[in-house]
Amino acid sequence: MPIRRIGGHRSLVSLTPKLSYGFKMNVSRSGYRVFSANSSPACTELAKKITERLGVELGKSVVYQESNTETRVDVKESVRGQDIFIIQTIPRDVNTAIMELLVMAYALKTNCAKNIIGVLPYFPYSKQCKMRKRGSIVCKLLTSMLAKAGLTHIITMDLHQKEIQGFFSFPVDNLRASPFLIQYIQEEIPDYRNAIIVAKSPSAAKRAQSYAERLRLGLAVMHGEAHHSESDMADGRHSPPLSRTTTGHTGLELPLMMAKEKPPITVVGDVGGRIAIIVDDIIDDVEDFVAAAEILKERGAYKIYIMATHGLLSADAPRLIEESAIDEVVVTNTVPHEVQKLQCPKIKTVDVSMILAEAIRRIHNGESMAYLFRNIAVDD
Image (cartoon, rainbow, N blue to C red; front, side, top):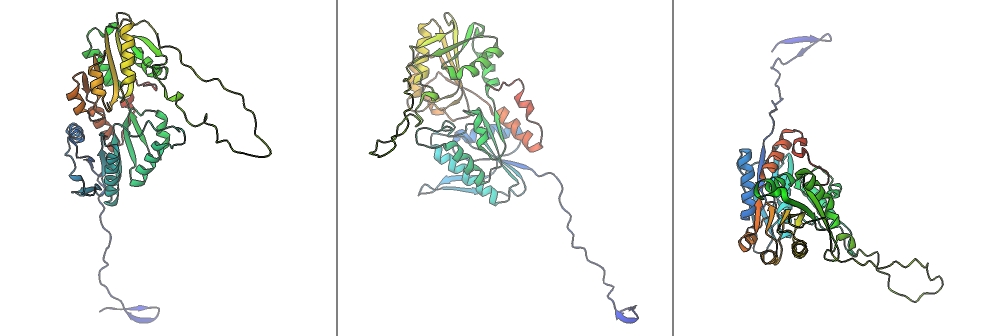
C-alpha cells in the first residue's frame, strides 16, 4: 500500500475508491387513482362513468360490513405517492356511507397516498348547518371528521348553503348542476318558451331568478302558510328558562314580541296558461312541492315540472309524486334513486358525471377550475 508523508510523518493512506451512497430520485409526476367507497350498484355505476370519461381503471378495493356491522376496507393495490379520488354517493343509509368514506380515507392515508380527494356529489348533513333549538351544527362536526381521517380536498355539488365551505379546513370545489338542468329544459320540455320559473318560497327566489334570467323567462314566487321555511323554525331563542323561585333581582322586562302569522298562500306572478317550472337544490319530503303544484294548477298552469339537483325522495315521495298534479320531477344522479324511479315513472335523471370527471382531471393536473364555473351566478 502506498505511503504518504503527512506533516513530516509517514502514514498509510488507503487509495480505495470513494463509494457514492446517493440514489437517483424519480422526478416524474405521480399518477392518480379513482376508488369507489361504496359497494352499492349506484355508486359503482357513477364511478365507472367517471373513470370511462377519464380513460382510467377503477381502483381495486373491497368495502364490506362484517358480521357485527363494522365497516371494513381492503385496498388491493399500491397508492404510495399518488393522488387518490374517492367517489362516494349517499344512499338511504347515510351513516354507513360516511363510515365507509372515513375508513377508506384513513386506509389510504396510512398507505402513504400523496393527496386524498373526496368526491361527494351530495354532501350529507348539509341541512344541519344551523343551530336548531338545543342541538348542534352536525355539518361542522362532519367536516372535522373528514379532515381527521386524512382528506385533503373535497369535490361536491350544490351545497345546501354555500357558507358551509367555511366549515372546512381544506379546499372545497362546489360545482353547479344548473347548466345541465337548464340544458334539459331547453331540449326536453316542449314549448319551454311559454314557461315560467317558480320559487316555491321567498328563500328560493334568488336561485329561481338566476334560472329565469338565463332562460329569458318570467319569474313567479310563492308565499304563504303552505311552506315553512327554515328561518321560521324554532332555534331556542324563544324558549324561556324554567321558572324558579328566586330572591332579590327578578330580571329585566323585555318587550313582548308579537307572534308571527303567515298570510294565506299567494302566488306573485301570472302562471295562467303557462308551464310552471319549480327549481330547488334538494327534493326530499315532497309535501311542500305537492301543495305548491296544486296551487299552481288552480292558478291556471297547465304543466308543472320540478327541477332539483339532489333527489333524496325519502319515505313515500314516489307515491305522492305519482298521485299529484306534478307532471315530471327532474333530478341529477348525485344521489342513488333507482328504486324511486321504478315506483314513479315521472322521475327523470340527468347525468352529471361529465363535470365530475373534468374536475378530477383538472385538480390532478393543477389546472384552473374557472372553466367549470363559466357564466355561473353566485345564486345558483
